[in-house]
Image (tube, rainbow, N blue to C red; front, side):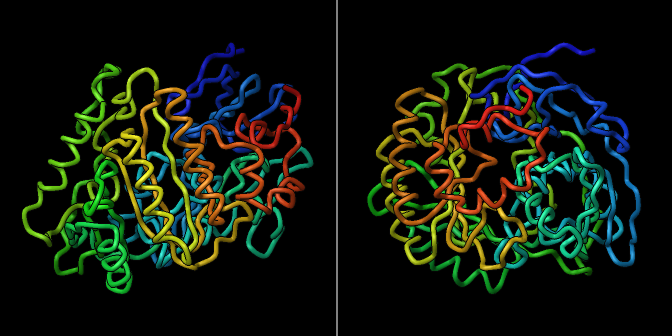
Length: 443
């Protein structure tokens, strides 16, 4: 049997020793698996410890990578849980179908997309990934269960956004969306302040299916919140051409960057240059879907830019009634700390409700920034940000989290006790034990 080994989260701040157990067939039973706590693990793009199970076993699901059925007339796809979003695009896009919702990386498995109920640039139009899941099979201690929004509905709601804790998803059926082209008509607007962002966003939500903004996390004063507002629609058929479906990154970071590379001076220089790279206020162009949806996927192992200390991604959601004031206060605190990196994203969520009990997206605004791990000074900043998010009734994103306290987790996700009634007893994670003060099952 394979020995336990260290496996890192994508942020590379947290590490765990666990037993890797490759899965190859979906007829697996829990009785045949190691007598320890279990957790499914796909492509490992979770930033925090939601993909780790310290002292237990990780069920490596990438071996469950088969397509089961695809109806090219209706866009209904059934596949195993280890199939990646990139593999779905490769199959479906040439046939006129695309993912209904996609996060900022295509290197995510279907099982991971369900477990984290991922969201994308079109949340205001489509909601979360879970809204397009028609069915899935769940392996639990008491047998195999097929779940749909109507059949075993409580378990369906607990599994969507349930962080992989309700059992092993072996296959899923999802509804894809029809598209006319692999090309996106893109509009990029340079804005000078946070107020301009909200004005642009309100107008763009009615015109564009996809909206998001890059912001300069170090800008202050009248330039606080400045950035580029990026919006797009799928191009009409008369502009269509095959487009390139890129299987591998263009570049790769070959080694861990030295600690001094990302410092307030270099990041400020980059952010300033990036902000001013667009001379006109508005730029319109057509682009392939890859750089529009997945710009970071063009660089392999980009997380190594943050060095051996790793990175935190801080993502919060704040409610609509206070989002302008709270986002402004968060940006002031972040800029004052001089710790923000060049990866900072701001967008708004719509009011389409997710089917998941524990789903993170909710109406309002969401702010996401990467921070190099600088130890106590970074944790102190996060404590200040957490307090602002908690006070306004917001929440943090579990898929990105590496240090949320149990008390705040319970306030951010008041349905957690209802969710806990649906946990599979054999399954656990480092994240769940941390935020609930629980001990690992059989660990």
